[in-house]
Length: 99
Length: 99
Image 1 (spheres, each protein chain N blue to C red):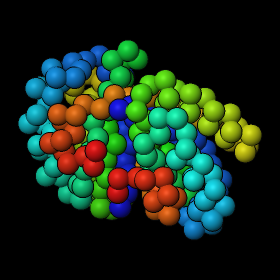
Image 2 (image 1 turned 120 degrees about the vertical axis):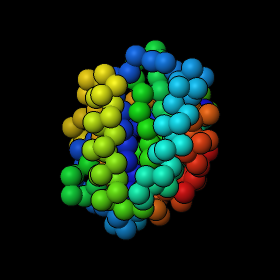
Image 3 (image 1 turned 135 degrees about the vertical axis):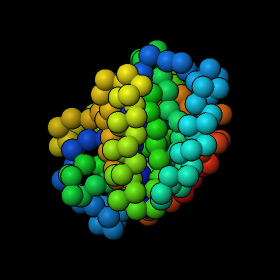
């Protein structure tokens, strides 16, 4: 499993309005190759949003990051920060990670 | 619930060696105020590591970030990037988030 961490400047919508607008996008994301799950992150006060994803493998995470970055830029997002990580499973088990 | 996302340049150790060195630290983290869980992230190829945390509230997440950043700097980590986010629960439910 690989973790993909993404964040970017974001002017909204947030919360329920964002959820209403992006429901179909969320459903489509579950069909991406290698996709396992996504936590949607948002910070209205700081004007940022992002996502924490799990993918089965690095190639899937990398392909998704490239596709999603291009999509975000088409929505007007000026810059996207993405990082791909392994999980340290032994330490994450100690700290009750929901994996 | 608040998500705390942390990452930083990191030269190692990684994997099992890191787990052996940081087991006591991991156990102590579970005792921090407001702590719910942590996923330990690492990327040996890029020389980066970090963590994705859930805390019960923003003040706990902020206090942990300040304490942990100071601790990482004492370990020789030159810079720490931390972001605190809300979760968009409705979208995260659609995308199978383990929350």
